[in-house]
Image (cartoon, rainbow, N blue to C red; front, side, top):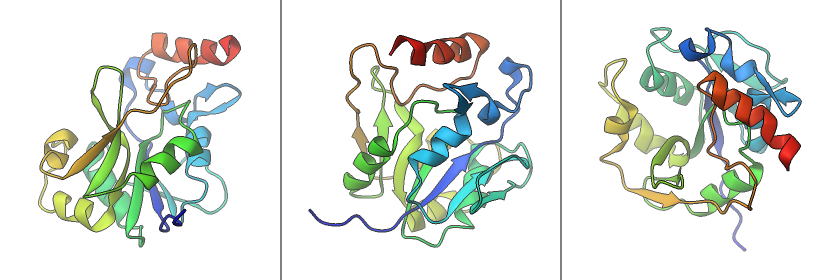
Length: 194
């Protein structure tokens, strides 16, 4: 088996979390640890690991940077994170994925062809913040893009491969995110069901 190239990781962990009462969403606990801790564990082998968002607790060796303008959305957040990455390949993940695993990230890395590869969910929807990309291609795609521009529009011209991870019966899928109190409650209940 061919060794996978080194990779960096950018985790978008900002946002206002209005539907969760403005709480620091990535720091919310699911299964006994913060969602951000789960995401950072899934990219443990990445160097660097960059979290984009307000100052928040992270493990040693993880860099926290802020997008400009703060609260400008995923496009400036991604640009800020990529500014700290010096690898040719980068994983890009949301900070609120309580069930993402190192295995999913490894599968994405092994499937990287073209510009990038990302996860699709059961409905066939692209999960834009759960993928692995060519760093230079992402940087080029972001040049001149205004804050609050839709990330989907920025990435749509790129040559992207899709991956639908297998999900064991009864297990929560790795693309599960937590944007509402109901989604957070379901995520917190899921580990007890497994």
